[in-house]
Image (tube, rainbow, N blue to C red; front, side, top):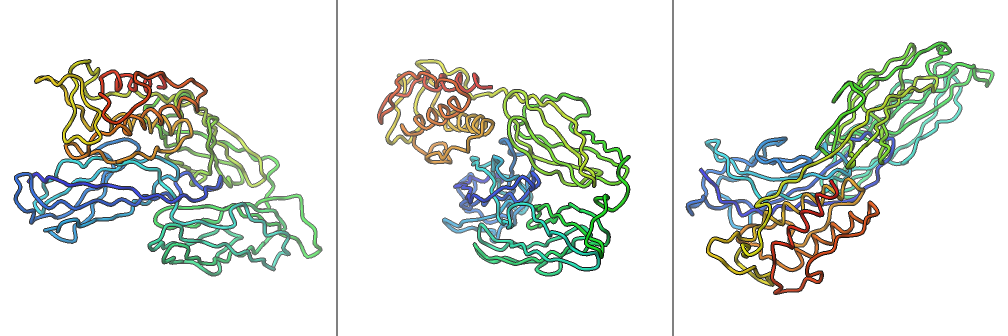
Length: 457
């Protein structure tokens, strides 16, 4: 079966706070929706729809790449039937591309939908938003602090909280937050068993995502004084801390064409490692997941050289570091490259058109892919220079359906100009600098944008 899809894929957004103590993989979600297909490619009614495959990742990859299956509620969708899903376990602030295919009950898969892209955002938050001190507490006694988890996107968010001794969660976990703004109080208790200062993490997990808060407390002996020992109360004067990066390489340098990178490695100490963190000299930092064996995924890197520093800290507060220099470069490829003057025509239907070069029988039509490829490339560049995904008019350009508009070309120029200013460069000069409705679209308009994109690689 080949299914002709009337895709209207949109990705919903809601911005939430990100804390440096949160792991890089924490609390990222996207809401995706589309109009279900109703007919096969031969025009006959669709009667055997079984499921959808939702493909997602830091670049367009459909079919192939990461995906999950969504069962269709009906084998024969009606007109304008909307399907909605939530993608969880994503990286907050990272740009994702999403496409969908339909699968019939025999397992046949349709062509991919036109993709959409957006930045993953949080679906729950935790306050306080900074580290929390439990103060001085006598050994044998305890002190409580209250954290508040909140639903920030609607729907139902279910999760739990956990803590490491001598901290514990005494109430409010597990939690279920129904509806945007719903809250739950979670009480964490510090019960020192030795006169020592302790720092560790309290973790809040929901929808496969984790937000961490650093908690600290000092245990006092019965006389009200502290000893000179920290952490677990063991002698740490002679302890040795080490940390190593083993993935994606154990070398000191690494080259990639992916704007996101996953790090993994090991850390050790004679007494114990309390935390592992990373920082990029081009921007961004967070806590890794784990200590002895640690990982941190979807670190955003910028074009050029990025020095990633990983730091391990032991119970005494002593630290050691290691670095990996990541060089990010990407070679953008475009359909029908280069576009030759005099061979470009418009892709009907046309409304508010950018009319074509002379219409020739053997001409190349202006295709939705020409604009979609430039949008994707510019969004990647904007991300690497700290800019958000651009809010495009007609975010999904459907071949043969979405008319080409003057605003489409204007927005490409505007979005790219923002990136040039972000790196301190003068924006490019464009042919026909003022774009108006009914202006002739030329090969040079798109070729200029392609060349200007490549100049930022």
